[in-house]
Image (tube, rainbow, N blue to C red; front, side, top):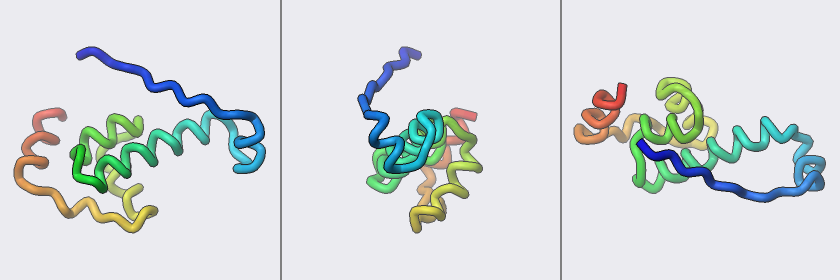
Length: 85
């Protein structure tokens, strides 16, 4: 599988205003992108978890931070997630 990289420039000023380290900001940005793609129905929980750099179970628990439920799984999504395991 070919992997691509997305580069998003940001300043130290942003990190200072958020009071975050580069590592925590980048992890949160990845999670936010994954959550939004999941919310829009563009990706499954498994694909979103991979994008966020976490396990599917951890991603499903993280969804509650954003008021989302992982229980919207349709049979095709479940099949896709099981295939990826």
